[in-house]
Image 1: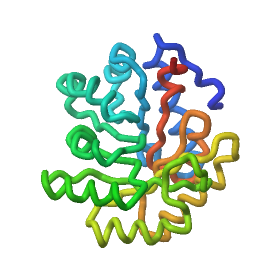
Image 2: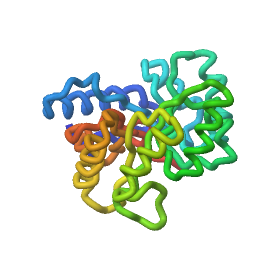
Image 3: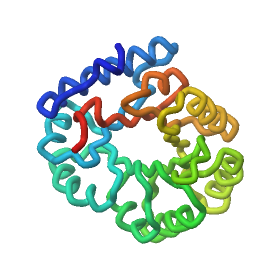
Length: 230
């Protein structure tokens, strides 16, 4: 199924969710993988609660948010109804938001600098909570984008694991807009193999089937489920 066919409107998000799940399963099977190896993270940033609820009712349980404040306004009430939701922070995290983020999110995809790693480690120690962390890699080495540059990844992963004791579960990337994402996905997968990391957060609405083909364990899909953002 072509990604171009997955263009939902606001009222049929549950149907669009089914289409995305089907596309993920097809991409996984084509790559010789089991569909259940891939976690669909429905990106609900800027999406109001009324549009999230049909997707929850359809069985989706992994959601991604970019901002701590926005997630804090939406998800506590939703999680009282759906306590088995796993909430992923997929946007930049400021160190002054670490305490709130650790309390609210289950997975943090954007560990991108030593100062943030240290703040997370201290909060994990203080609370006894442990959240899976993904190191964000700036595969395109873009000045305006967060993330560790590829030639610094090995050292940073070692620092997070050995120096800070962080639970480094995976690597994450956002390829440069307008570029072929495949080389970036392949690079992330190679860095993960080299560091003994088995989870890869890569692939969004425009390119997630290709990410699945190259080993993505988490794809972050928003527009194909919820429609275009305001």
